[in-house]
Image (cartoon, rainbow, N blue to C red):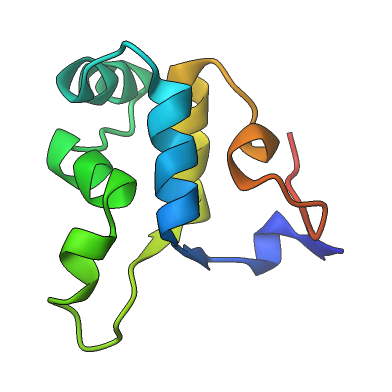
Length: 97
């Protein structure tokens, strides 16, 4: 198990994007952006859209994939009132409270 302090970013996938969109539910992208801003770590609606639909953006990167920081994921999960494990669905990374 790897502690979150040793993980800076996650290699993002279509599956994780769909999971984020499912967790967002009926909340609009702009509403989620506003919630993250209220938390004090704004995540733009454009970036959230990029995370939900990474296939549209990976073609534009030299790497061929999108990565996202653990801090951004934690902010999104707090704004959605969920746990990061609901998003990542992985026991391989231990996230400290």
